Structures are given as C-alpha cells and as structure tokens.
Image (cartoon, rainbow over all chains, first blue to last red; front, top):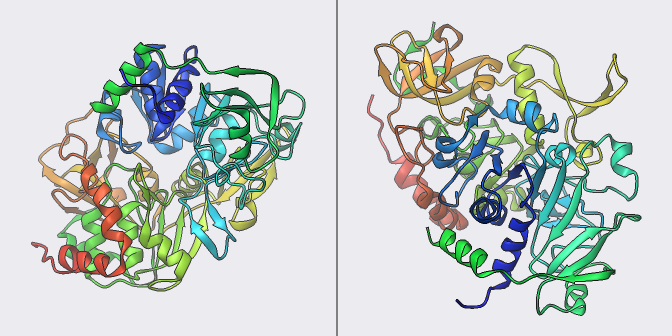
Length: 248
Length: 271
C-alpha cells in the first residue's frame, strides 16, 4: 500500500478522536468521511447526527450534502430542523461536534461569514449555518481545517462562532454550556487549548512534520507543548478502510 | 380549504411583486418548479426568506428577482459557493441585495414563533458572535431563572411555498423523509402553496410522515418532479451531479443567463 497522504492522515486522526464517543454531530466533507471511518474501524455503535435532522444515520457512501436520501433512509430517527436545534443540540444531548471554518484564531473562534469588511466583503462565505449553537451547546468541538496562514489567523474578519472567546472564563461569562473546542486537527498536526491560557498550542505533529513547519503555517506566534507527541502513522487497517470508503 | 389548481394559476394568485416569500426545503423537497414559475411570471423586488438559499435562490438572485435575502447558510452543500449570491453581495450584480442573516437555530425558532403567532422566540445562541451587531437579535432575562437568553423576532412571510410527495383531493398534504422547517414555514405565512408529486385518493400514513390539513393551506398544485435537482424521498433521487455542475454553470454571468434562458424562461409549463 502506498504511503498515506497528509489529507489521509488528517482524516485518520479525526476518526481516532471518535473511538470512545457516543454521539457525534457532523457536516459534510472531511468530518463526515472521518466519522464514517470511525464507525468502520473504531466504534461501530457511534451515532452520527447531521443537521438535516437525521439521527443515527448509517451511510454506506460519503454523502455529498447533509440531506442526501441515504442519511434519512438509514437513520434511527428523522426530525425537523427546529427539533434538531432545540431538543438535541440546544439541550446539550450531543457529545462532540466536528466543525470547519474559513478562519480560526488562537482561541479557536471561527469565521465562516466574510473575508474582509462585512458591508463590502472581499469574499462572501456561506454564513453561520448551525455552527454558533452547535459550538455553544455540544459537549465538545473538534475543528478540522487545513494548516495555513490563510486559515489560522491572528485576527478573524468576523466572529461567526465562539470557541474560547477572548480567553479563560469567556465561555462561562457568555453562558456557553459545552466545553468548546478541545482540538484543532490540521494536515500538519493537532492544536489543543492550553489548560491555563486556553490558547491553541501545538501538542502533536504528524509523522515527518517539523515544529518549524507548523509555526511557519500559523498566523500567530504558535506555542508548542513541552511534551510534543508525534502522530502514530495510519495503520494498514485504517488506511485500507479509508481508501475503500472513498472509492465506494 | 386549499384550492387545488394549476401551478401557473397558484403562483399568479399567490405572489405579488415586493412580497416576502419563503420557498423552504432543507436540502430535501426544494420547490424548484414553483420557484421557476415565479420567475417566468416576472415577479420582482422579492424578499426571499430561507434557511439554506441553495441553487434555487442563487438562480432567483442571479436574474435580479430579489431585493433582500433573509437566510442562515448560503452555500452549495458539499460543493462550495453560490456564485450568483456572491456576485450580488460582492459586486452588486445584477443589482445590490440587502442581507439579514441568522444562525440555523435562530431561523428555525423564528419560523416556530411565526407558526405559533408569538412575537418572538427564545434560544441559547448568538452570545459573543459578531452576528449580534449585524442582525435583528436581542437578549432578555428569563423571568423565572434570570438566565440571559437570545430573543429572535417571529418570521411572518407573505407567502410560503413548499413541496411534498402527495395530497388528496381536499388538499390535505403529506410529506416524509427530512421534514426540514416546511410545516413551520407554511403555518407562519399569510398565504401558502404546496406543490406535490401526485394527487392520491386517500393519504396513507407513512413512517415519519408530516401531514398538513388542507384547510390550513391556500393552494395545492401538482408539479411532478417539482423538487429536482433536489429530491422527494421515495419518488425522485437527489441529482448530485447537477449540484456539482452548477458550480461551473453559475460562475460566469453569460453562461448563467444562457442556462436560465434555456432551462427556465424558455420552458412552457403544461397547465
């Protein structure tokens, strides 16, 4: 089998994060691939929840949209959007949520609204979707993004979704009940909030990635954990399952 | 009681220039046929309301039918940008569009308040985000616990249009699969239309089926295949290839206009 690509490593690392998770909230793209992979190799009873209202979906194929027919056909329950956000997400019934964003800052706040000024944006992005309340109320949030200075920025152009706000205590002051972001998984490594400062700190690099590389690709002065781990490379099982899934 | 009429007649009676119109559907059951008929009848200056604007609103914005957009996620799901929406916001083409944006939770609750005829809804949300400075949201204190909660104003569209699998001759409607926010949108609106794949003699209850009594609707019209390229669970499949192809069609203004002329404006609907 050929060596894993950086994209594959990122997906595999995201999937491992779900090994002991009971319920996961996912959007489309890499997080969805990771969650389906987790069901295949780590955690067959993992409950996949998509914001279209499908709870306990068991897709065989990676869905293009969060509302593909296969999701509702295989779900344990299909609920309306108001029910999804009020009874399931808002009430804190979901353990972990994967989110993506165009920009992430050092406190893992997210921008998916605009690049540039709100009233005259350089790039108009899709907008908030479910992210603000998902991040407010799910047990924890794992952010999956590419590692680059375009994405990991010193200052967000727009705060769409609060991660750790302006630092320690911010979530409590704002009344946000979940733990917030516990990890940012990139194609270079893993960033986690420092227990004291809650600022994102490089705690893990993927095999073959240097600290210098990760710092160079981060838009702020990236702190590095004393005990920096190196990602276990994808196993044969993980990689074979991922490639088989992508080929379906 | 809902009047069962042709799609052309329903749209002609239902929608006026300047109306606020919600064509709902959360990935599933998007009322494309009704939206296209509305464009063919030349409706203008619309306030378009929808959680997930998607391709249909990209088309409506691209031809200049929208004055304002109220929404929570304006993307082509799993594919990327809505290029006509972006062109309108970034470059004012074909004309500038006013935005009011929310989160999904905010929009869903606004529809619920509208359906319940309450002035507003409450939720835990918006706190700490820049949305607060750019949209209509307020914060109130719970009279029982003192908790600070977000308050969002009820949505009361002039018109709601949704698609469903079937209706009976009295205009009672049943939809199943992902139910989205369609029931709330219809009950929140002053006037409503449900387009259906087929009229059946009697509605047979389906697992997860949502039934809306005909007396709560204004119009029902048949529009077989009317949610394509979205889908109607059990009847049609989502055309994912078209969602991917739209990225290229919509990127370029001339290509977009030519596509609309050929596939929407040039099409005559059977009455």
